[in-house]
Image (tube, rainbow, N blue to C red; front, top):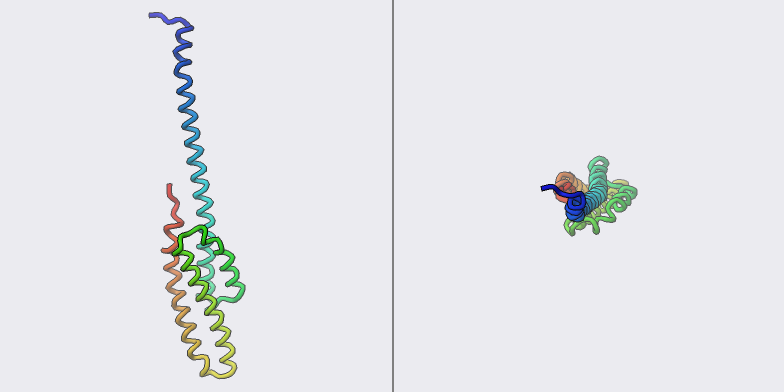
Length: 155
């Protein structure tokens, strides 16, 4: 059996179209996968910024004992997109962290003022401040667990 050049050409041209189609499908799939991975990386970066801002805010509180207005503003700035990046549980926790941070700031100011007036007046405020500071000590470890499921890079 000897095939002519025309028959061989016809044979290969019949397979050429499906082969090109398979190559195109493979390239399209690879592009889709790459776009998906790029999206996941961008989402990770945005989520990590919120996590890092939260850890920094809590670290400042643990270091200084209270946040200043600048730290509170910085925390709000670093977490303002959390509503769009996480489920409600994270936003609720961030709201609680912010609320307790503001309470600490207010208590610190109140304690400073009452200590000037009398040493007995600051006792209750100091107890409240200690309680909130203890909450932040525990929160430092809990926050990692909360964010962990959102910061995993899935393949």
